[in-house]
Image 1 (cartoon, helix red, strand yellow):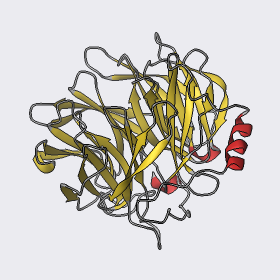
Image 2 (cartoon, rainbow, N blue to C red):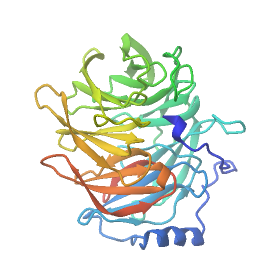
Image 3 (spheres, one colour):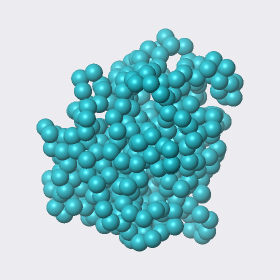
Amino acid sequence: MHGVKNHHTATPTSGRRSAPFALTVLSALALLAANGARPAAPDAAAKGSVRIYVGTYTSGESKGIYPLRLNLGSGALTAEGEPTGTLNPSFLALHPNGRWLYAVNETGDQKGDPPGAVSAFAIDAATGALTYLGQQPSGGVAPCHLSLDRGGKHLVVANYGGGSVEVLPVQADGRLGAPSALVQHTGGGPPTPGRGPGPHAHYIELDAHDRFALVADLGRDEVMVYRFDKAKGTLTANQPPGLPLAPGSGPRHFAFDRDGRHVFVNNEIVSTVSVLGYDPDHGVLREVQTLSTLPAGFKGDNSTAEVALSGDGRFLYVSNRGHDSIAIFAIDAATRRLTLVGHQPTLGKTPRNFALDPTGRYLLVANQESDSVTVFRVDAKGGRLTPVGTPFHVPRPVCLLPVPLGR
């Protein structure tokens, strides 16, 4: 729910195609001191560790995108170099080649804001440092999610404010071209506390065959489906055009099942998760199951944020903001229906995004309102989570992007 974020006050970097500002040495040392850690050596062996980029809201202390290193043996996090300055990089995506990183610049919803945008960066494989390649307008207000097709030829972005989605071609050097498609949503669900009127596109992702793009529109209470033309980079409404969910539910994010025939959607406003059947040949969705992400008897305010599958596809995780927990569900191997396993406190406030490392050993949580990232070891047998160490300080964390080393 966008109402939980602190409205941004940072000033964008000026200058045509200028490099992003760097954190001062003093600030970098302060960040390291706050965590009691030294930055990882640039030539550290890739084996046994994973790079984690952290997207943030750049209000207050935050400077942009923070590079961390996760030790796969101990689960310890260390800072790796300096943050890359860019305005409100609230969601990140990695190109399939591992060489380029893309970030939304979630702006445009406050007076005096620059328009929403998507920025491109080149990744230094040795150090993790990011080099700014340029940006393109996102086609709407407050872009909040982006992803790429399997071939890395197109980037798709969802704009929360105003409810639109856009396609941006990816050029040979990683830069983004002018939009090849822009679709404006209309309408909206019933008045509901926690969201403004009208459409609010919150998440967009292409299916495994790049045939259809699914969009979770929180304002319309609908998962919308578009046919995607890989040659032209265009979106055309499918028939039927999507699946309406319960009025006032607010579908936010979703995860495709490993079988390619189910989709798991977290409904932000009513704190539920839905299992949807998916026909990959025709792009048609159907509702299979919906259940609460909260423990029985919980009466406080809550909204869900992120949903993700375990590496083996046997468990589903959903973050609760308010209850401040990760809800853990077992997935039936035959029916893909969910059974609640339990809840793990996130050791911080307002768990926004979370991510599993590429090995599936660890789950990391961005606690937005307590300026921390927490690490949990995943029990492969039962899906439960065990805290590792103490929360790691990162200001205003919103998104976590694991990047394997040595690619």
